[in-house]
Length: 144
Image (cartoon, rainbow, N blue to C red; front, top):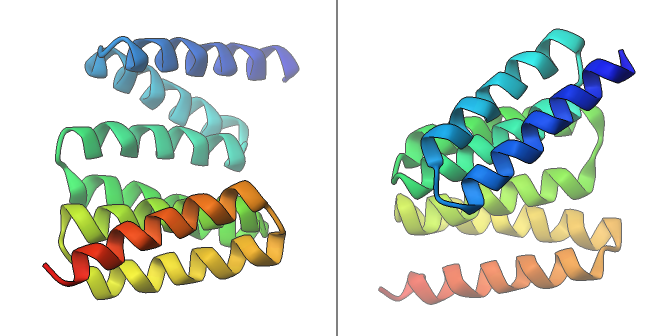
């Protein structure tokens, strides 16, 4: 099982390299492969990382509905697992999509406010700052 996990992590590393170099199709293919593998072995945290990476590609391609759906799936899993820091990040990512991609400011603020409370509860100062920055960007959009 450990060897398989290393192979999947290698897929993620390769996908990250492709994503960084701008090969979105290649990265998406490898992220999808890792998604299937994480589902197969029951690694829900790894699955969520893969879903989040795929969501980033969809967001880059302006497929906000698809990106939001993947983040929502990860959100539900993080809630079940009790991973408050990762849940906060998932909610913050959803807030960005809602606020900027779909122009749903009220929903975006709701997501980012929950993310902020989770980050404060978790005590992660860098995550708190990141979420405060996202909230500020969304609030700036409110007047537009």
